[in-house]
Length: 364
Image (cartoon, rainbow, N blue to C red; front, side, top):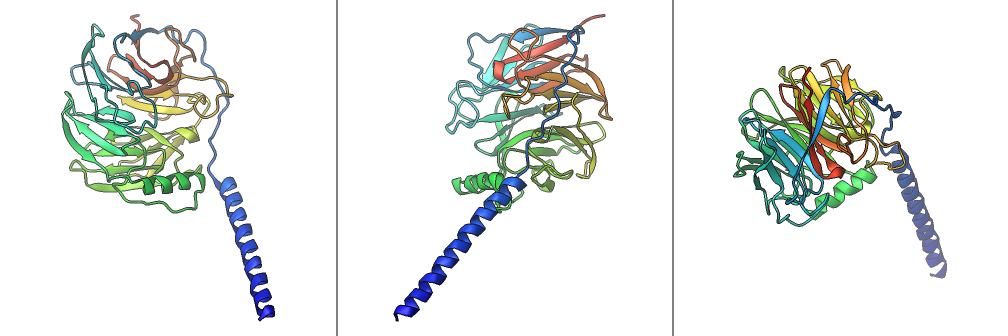
């Protein structure tokens, strides 16, 4: 009996050692296999590159605009701005103050505010061709559709439990760990763009690493989903927009690149160059793609500080770029979102400066 016990003990000890070694090997493999944040060489714009614009700040002395995250233009030309009021990214309780501001296009005065009690960590803002307002929330993990005045029309997404959140967090650190994967289960969705047929495309974002298309009724159509640095993968799809032909442009933030897709989700092209930097937000006007380059400060503060606006043509060539990290008028500190009008005026959500900025096209 004693020998049998000793035999069983030795095998149990060996098995424990094997399991421990396998666990260590798995963690080591996962560490080295985990997608890395891509850093490009810093390439500052020229000092006089802002000469063609006049920078103006939307003043909100009576409104606390912590974390300026989104900008969009209403059909009447007024600017719609999204912020997190007195909270920050990852806040877990409903924000009791309004988080959406409508500014008059001429006077820059506040027309109205709305959104109190609706959001926890609002992130993406877009206005559809019909004038409806779409907002993503990275804490509720839902997509919201409103009238321009803030009346809720539709909510898209499944309830996101703590179990799901734990699995998604583990998958981010250890990519081989399976995570729930269903069309309507968003995991920190970041932005919304619109198709020619009235549907939407969601960049879904910090945990799901995918783009997902839905028709005008909200029915799921297709998705592109892979976590990583490879050509077909995403590492934080953060901003998204479409052009008049239906092509889709995605700001693949942690991979420091822009990916271009067909309306059906086929990869067409990848744009990655130091002049583009780290794209956070995208917006298309005609044949010009406006890019908010948020730089590296949120990923690695030791890297050179970089914040700029970049304008590209439909082939990814740089037409114009300007911007410098800082707090002064004309500076930016992590431009998080961008929109432009037909006249070439540019509007930016200046995240860490907690403000909204317009770069007015200077008259010749």
